[in-house]
Length: 109
Image (cartoon, rainbow, N blue to C red; front, side, top):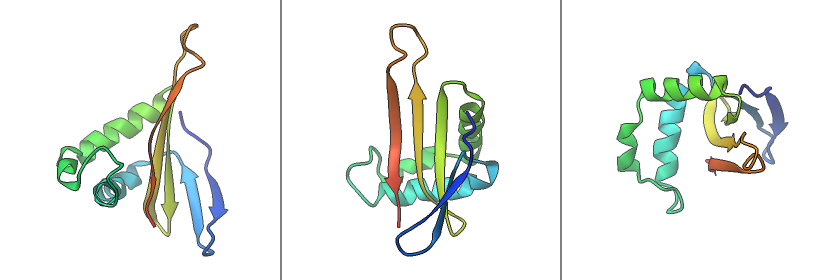
């Protein structure tokens, strides 16, 4: 699902844009995944495990999520760099449509 872009001002005065990922974000996302993996023990990967992420894989992920009816990804861009991301998936079945999952909530400064 493509989410409408919105902007807000950070405490330090910089502008942040939240939007669905675009092809132009692929390299920035790969760099972000590597950097954020080394910043905390609470992310379920180490920087050396980020080699499995490729530009082709990120493009396929972006395309799939943006075309989905029950999934969305948000990318936070500050000063032209990917500063965070979040992915949400919600269930559509009658018994489970009240459930969702949120992944990769991490911002880098």
